[in-house]
Length: 418
View 1: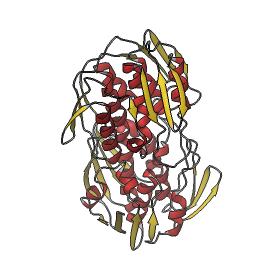
View 2: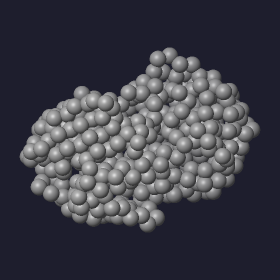
View 3: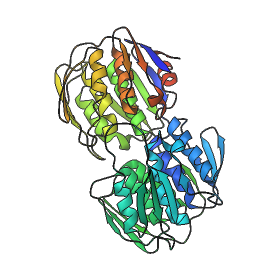
View 4: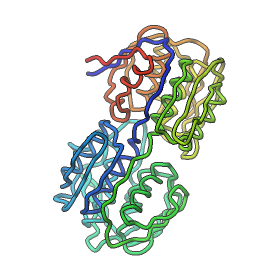
């Protein structure tokens, strides 16, 4: 089992290049199934979830070539429309192939996906949407099967609750449906906008991505294209907090500051100095104390749930009490027990955590429970007194590219051990 060993108390100084967004690359890879022509994807980060998705595409019949961060993918024929459990058991985003497979072949059989145990992320929103588009859907023996032998038909789909992967899945399916599809109460995340841009480059007709209503005019076929994945806003946010927490100064390069508005605003309230240098770089530092700031997670453009655990690590060092309210996932406080092992004082009441800040954490042996909890513990370890060992960092590898290498490059004392 791989672990990270971190010696705390060092200020981070220097520059970090932000990788491509895992949560944008996953649907982009799935979307390559919609055409039989070559697709070129640039800025694909080397993280475990994407390697899993690439393996899934190859099992479905795709030919894939890798050259650094560049992928060339062509799926001339789909040999099988089944995504087996063995391939997708570690990755929630496997459901993203449902829409493309049904749209192109009229059939999909996908294992009920796995991923982080952070709470219910019901796939029923995807399935209800596919049924609106004319597919027959059934679930049995751990698999979801969707059939549309005569093709999909455009319809109005009103999501009962905002779902990012549901929006992406239905948007992909609707590109090849007959007529117009309207998605209401759609997710507005930058990753949804990025996918729409890629699909439009392939010949789709999508309007309104980034707004709550998206309109898709179906086309007969899509063609090949080249697309560059957007920067990972969650990775960038994690490093912003790392600089503020350690009192260092970091410059993040190749990033989109507009995607980090809520995080930057909260960091400034907490006493960090955040400077947007140009359209693609951010500098962050801190001179004074960390002030307590409350956050409530919301769908974009609100404070992202994927930054909640990292924010809690920052608030353990704040000069007073702060509150974190989690509204997206009901089981996303599993990092709290590990933070308390390091000396944090945190009280839980339902979906609200009260952090009693101001006491420096101490190094300890802790265990990661999910992807973002892993990042939280890394941040806490960077600021703690002494050495921290983080177990089960395979969670970290699912979403962060070369994290320890990037941190070591700006002065952190971190190493991976087996």
